[in-house]
Image (cartoon, rainbow, N blue to C red; front, side):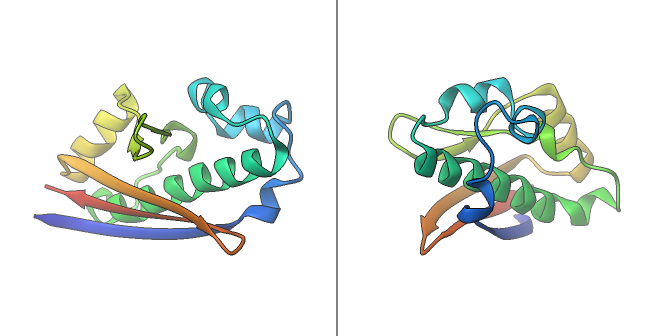
Length: 125
């Protein structure tokens, strides 16, 4: 049963101003996400915009079950499998967040098109 959905869009150009060593990138994205980021500046901007959109979409999908509880967006990490499909990184924080929200899983999808990184998240019980 679906208990929440979320969608978010981030303008890729907003991430172009940050390089891999910037404080924002180091603070907002996990070491694992940073290690998987492409080195080419334009590809990196799209990559980080997509990762940020995932965080916001997951928050929106889980928020109804959290009753206004604080969510640390830095702890919501996503990567891609070898086939290109995105997934949320299983961490103790994510497991606890799912438990609090009454969700068994959150499924995500990400795309980049026309200067936007768009993420969708569906939380299920």
